[in-house]
View 1: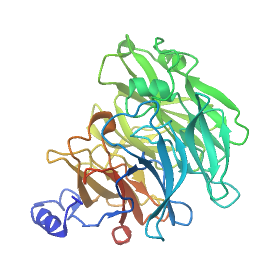
View 2: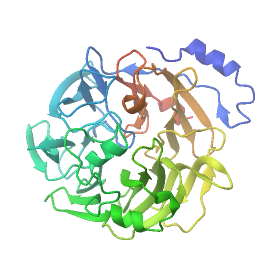
View 3: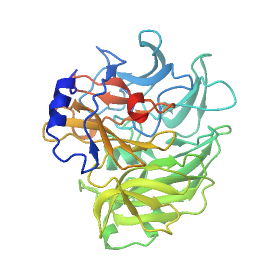
Length: 412
């Protein structure tokens, strides 16, 4: 496993001249344990969902037979659980062709009044995009009429988007398994953000692309196609946020706005509109942490008022860069990573909210073969106790899932 050894961490620590003055703690070597193994490749997907169940025994993962190309419509993803108390044994629980490298198939535990044995994931039914709720212990399932993106913390509803349009405009995030509708329309009013009741399957389009393209339009929209991505509920589920993006079809770069809405689909609010907005997480019901820029301070992590009433506030200056950021369950820490540096190292870190200090945890090599839409980002994710994290790694020339125990760091 090509992660930093303790000797390498010691050498790195010795070379950190002035690190404390810059708000960085010396590297804290936290070993990464592989909980999946070859010959198959394994990954989970995005950073905004926890793969651990309520007991911390079972970990959701995806399995596939290849790792260095984009999936095509017929490629099947195997869904499974890893038993962390039984030698990391893998058990298959389902299959789907609705998946991507960056966000998987939205596989996640579904909370509810009964014990947590249900999962939800995206699927294809008679050629139509759907979602499947599966009780993996009882082998019982039912199909919903639309896929899901983000599920409400109570497990009662979800918000979603069109994954075929996402596949064309942001390769690596959408699905190749069904054809795109309205591909020639820059901003179709039939597509946008849907809200779906997970009990009944009833769904409503709460904001459409034509509406977003007509809201405070300017010269940046000329000739551009519009889409949405990165939907996420606030911790208590009173609101959700999403990114509105646009680009010309042949461009490789895009521009972004951050929006927020009430969970019932009302109260659309344009939170940030400077054309650049990257990864984010909700701190609380009214505040978003996001990597963006302002004319005064440039690129940083900022705290943003989701109601749009307060100016953005810079946090973690000089110790963090754009990465997949998420708050610990107690909101005392922010987990973050980086894209590969010049040595192809992806760095994993914790940022302490109270002090703004950075604690470097480990670094993972990313082989050049894993690039573009099928790159392997770490996408670090918390467990529910806030003492463990897991990442997707490809440093052994395979995609596998790794767990790190950060209990000593978060108790420091």
